[in-house]
Length: 182
Image 1 (tube, rainbow, N blue to C red):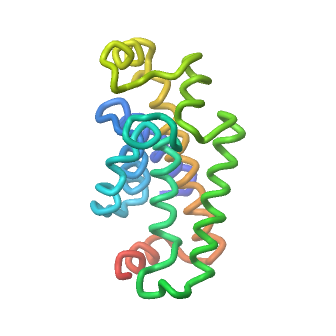
Image 2 (cartoon, rainbow, N blue to C red):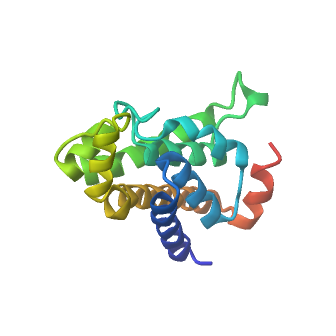
């Protein structure tokens, strides 16, 4: 599949997964992994508590953003065997996180879940309150609002991964094998 097709696939899967399953971080993780055909269930599981700005509280970073950073760091990040070093990979993951951050800032003006809600809905919702959660849903959270945020985050992170692979001259198929050996 060509680069643009993979990015579109990540977008479409991000939208679909958030619409059908909820849990923005895990939906972004699954969308990116599935678009690139690189599944890692431990990374997916680790995204569980990151939904709606961590623990459904909204005051942390968007789950689409955190999920994207998790997958990018799975590809390009410091490994445990080189905990005392691996500066190049560590800073590569930092740089990719900044690039994803910049995309969020351009599009939403923030990476904070609550603030994205305010931009999309005009207010923030306490998802621990059943009435507010219902209003959130009624206003299209999983029809076109949060679904679009997760879709964009998935596409942007996929694009950044593919660009880094290109910069390194590594075909995705070659890299898939290496990334899961570490």
